[in-house]
Length: 468
Image (cartoon, rainbow, N blue to C red; front, side):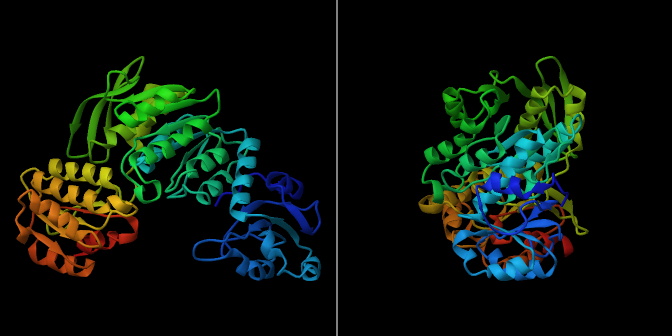
């Protein structure tokens, strides 16, 4: 990971409001790390209490490696011998919550770097939108972007801690599954531009209702700098409700006539999706190297950010066309047996599942369309109903066969049967059983969409089919 701006102990104390326990308060550190396996000896080690590992258990290990600075939870600092820490010439700072302190360090670094920030959230598409936006912004500015799924209260700080004084923009992604999480991430990154891609039925288990999802996503608007801008989806009714209440300047994107940044003449080709990008001053044709009409909305959001930042139209076009699909997001491949695999296994919620099924229906042409699906997680009391609706959609979309695994497989089957899908075309089993059944039934020209929530491990099915 690239180093950011060096830290003095005084800056660490100022950022975290921490208590100095031991050490030379004039010591400097080249960076911040939470990983004992990858830490440099001149880094500050922040002991995070994670869901799987507690960083405090690795303190002796990092000190043995030569690290000379640690940030620890106050309630765990008593277990450390001050005499031993002083013998090791350790800088030890205690805080109430190391995870929050990591965010405070990142917020401090974001301000001292002088970079501006684009923060992107939404129920679906935010990762692809973030990658597209980074590609567009990077055409004209020295920029930094979130890596992988670093979009939570640990991942976002790790991204912002890489900012140095040469960066002009950072493009970051904000994820959430509970109220208040976007607000905290917004505090950390203090966006100049905030983007909401859409608002759909995701994380209902933690948010309770679509109203709850809308309010949680809307938290980003309150954290945009007063002089900043919200880039919002004009085609999403709930996003429009948020737009009507915000005091921030708003730029709309979408297919709506009310959108400043629009798309027209959308065409699906053998290479992806093309469309006319209508900017305020000119129109250019864009050819995305990714499948699915729904990706056009993500491209429009990225284009709106580029337009706002003064990126020329042809550079916006080039940035969008340089975008490569995120792994597990509508990745299309053809096997040696002539079977087309659509790997959309990165994650799943009802909106993204519907979009993927719509794409399958379009892509398969006269071939057979087959869905291999795992559960959509974090839907709470709405899970059975929403899974049933996916089954019904499959039946109405002319999907030839459905392969299902997970707790809600029966709900999907029931929804499909309610729409008169032949039960013999619905298979429920483990991933391994599904793979074996597919190998017996697939034929050249078939199109197979593989999708499910992250925890379902559906990428193993996609990989098995590619290797077959």
